[in-house]
Image (cartoon, rainbow, N blue to C red; front, side, top):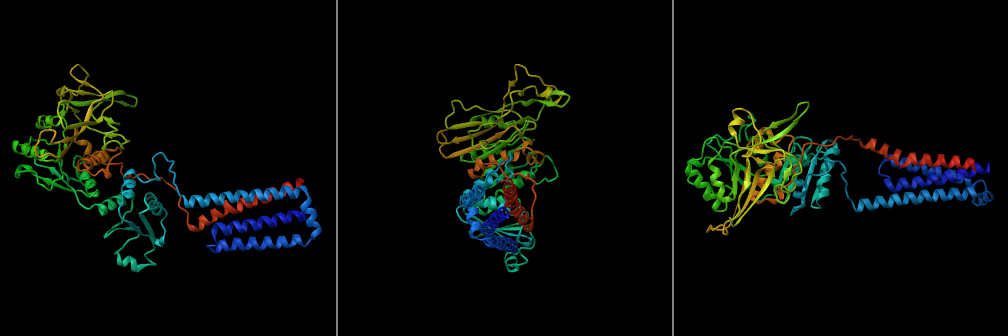
Length: 517
């Protein structure tokens, strides 16, 4: 009887202890919390009263027993353990840090998104209008933005409970996020990371850069959505990062328009007129920025044009060996590249592979030319080579490495930073050029595919116009799959894992140990 009474005393202590822990952790925020605390508190007090009703003599005997000392030690150890957990919980709340252990970083913002919000000069407010005021997936994404910068704050709003806000901001659909930055505001109806980051970029940019794409020579059409060889994806990607993209017919005007922050020459089929070449040369010599996409056997007039800028565009096509399942090595004209210059701003953050269908070599040739800094930013693999027998490639579909070819790695893209005064150009200033030996790497078929062609293309444009904060890896569509629990389900899981299960295990363990004593 005395042994059972002692166990009753320990059970009373455990019940009161867990009532206190529940009150500390939950702060009685719901009816379930209040019920749990009340039941454990009342049951613990009743067990304690029943124990003490056995008399003080039993208390003295109980306190003097070895089993009571061990039991008290176990209870104190449990209290100490939960105290440590509480302290760790407090520290993790006050000094919050997130760890993303997934290989692809699917629970973290992309480098570009993080860079954009870390560079905010003003407070950025995000208001998410969601059904019922709760959307765990969207909230997790907004949490990532808030974690990346102290200037970011967000609200989850139920438009049915606050219709005046929905009407004020003209919100007509669930899962719409309103972005407010200073006096600028906009809404995003499909709030993916990519869409939110693009909206933030547009809200934070004071000026809009203009990208002028030259036409009139059979270049890919920037408005051709259905054509896989078109450049509509490139135009959309640039527009999303707040660039204005327009076509320019240089043959019909005297010079490159002053509004052009960058001029793009993309795979011309017909040769440029002498007047157009002169206009481009004058534009670059006045501090302009040029992007040249010159695939094999196209734009041959630009080979001589680019030589004074420290670039040699090869009269060749790059061939690489590819391994095909059950077929062994074969020749390919679409090199898959992961060899980048890690010192240049365009490629230093680029970690994924890029695909270059039908590319020629583009190498640095700035020796003895003052004022030029030329960097070969992309190279093919050691198994590749620059094939000079173009007739063999395009007519007989044959290629072999011989003494006239250049063994890989072969440079297929280069960037030029030109100090005009050091080059002897009176106006001075700085010009920038980027030249790629392929045009297809940036077309609709390859820009938004599996590879990182889009990041390379946009980084190049950003470097040319001097927007260094945009030079990074952009948000990917891939997201991790996970289970969303309702608030009620989360409460049940919390009580079972944090309170009920440890409590039952502790009582059962003490009961078994007590019987053995």
